[in-house]
Image: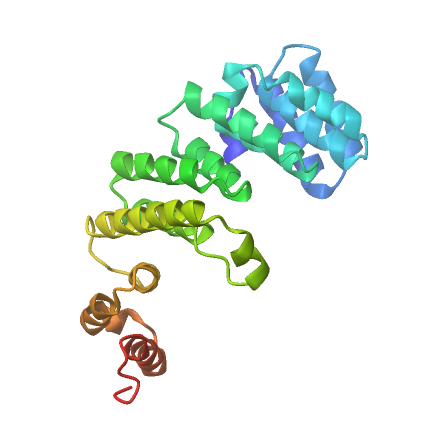
Length: 262
């Protein structure tokens, strides 16, 4: 739907664009490609070229589809136009080309840093690549621009994922192979990330179940069960059932050595 808001000059061109979408929606991909070719014969519309790549891919003409999509990667106009970018991303992701999807998102974000939609697509690329550090920084920039608690929660989640990746291995073979100095450095960095997550959480009130669960998880990872219990006492009403509140409390009490109380 969003892509359809990208209008071109002339009612005939817009009618042809609508016909492309209708053909793609109905699965008539060959007809969609024909409509694209008709428009591209008149002008080099980036969105139409992206739609042609999608149509070709759905027709099984994979090499041609990628060739057309890659023509758009070097175009700042194409990379920074949300509808065009999202269409090219569909082509790259369907082809399993995560690195190319990330590259075009990075170019789009660089060309249009104020676009939340492009930033979110780039964040998604970072997540798929397990690049939690860049994802955290991007989420923080989104939060600073929007002030939305959801963006802050994304940043906290990315910090926790980074911390988890640095946690000591649990199986014996990996533990034996782990250099003591490296293990100590990893643990220091993990604790730093947990402190960062705690500091970020302090910027906003807890107002949803998801935010509560995220903060409880952060406290557990930091070994701050008492703080987690205090948070649960204050905000436990955000959990949907008394049973869930009871399970959360029992788990935290056990972590503090008060299992009998639980």
